[in-house]
Image (cartoon, rainbow, N blue to C red):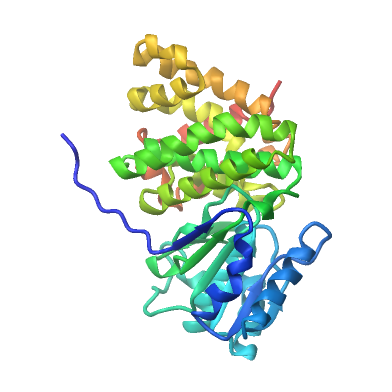
Length: 390
């Protein structure tokens, strides 16, 4: 029987090549003093930063540029941005960049309008979001995090070496500008890593215990697009069609997790990122996926089989048990094909950190909505298996 469900998505999406040209018109609807949030300028994206500021000013929007976003944003970096926003009296925040920039923009918009630091509002934290935050406009320059359409901001407390997230409907960006032109210069490994992150979002929302017919549609289409377009894109980074399809797949996957969520792999990957902030989120996910599939597939055979058949349509002739069992080997081949075949050792994770990584996995709720709910020992064992790869 069709289960009942709710779906909520307040973000207006502007998708297509050249959509950045509309940034001034879009932002000016929400304020006249914008804090632009980005990483430090570098050759590939500095022209985009300057163009965005020029377009905003042309529309009568004053701009202050916080360009100190760091990978795996920390409490300290977010507070520096919030201080600039207060001093500038910003009334709208524009996150331009990858997930770190957009997540930082969300956290700044929260910290400026609430007491304490953004970290205090993380999952199971001391405080709750109680009122409207500054409006957020999200402009992604990668195709992977989906943050442009989610109510999540991921952040790290370096003192605790703990990576967590703020989750609240008020963190949804008001509008998202998804312009594939902005990802055309993304280098190969970043393309692969963010692309696999999007794949994991779609995969996990599809096998999530709270999946619903709406998120299933979005997730399966995202998986189909990534399986079809990511490998050829990595062979030709200038492929505009593949870039556009990956940007759309990322957005679909973001829409999926915004209404469903992620499962065990994301909890483990977040724990890895807290201990080793130099590891890209997509890299951390790629490490845990083969073991995750092997251990979880028996608990959701029909769904794992459906994903296997996207990779290999000929498996439609096989029973679900056989197709789901094949997905483990399929995933290994896929990770090798896209250059994401790593062990924890390759990512410079000390072996002695594995027990604490397993322990911190249980500080996040992702494991509770996995089809198979593991014990701490059942998380540690796959981590040990994933330590080195052939």
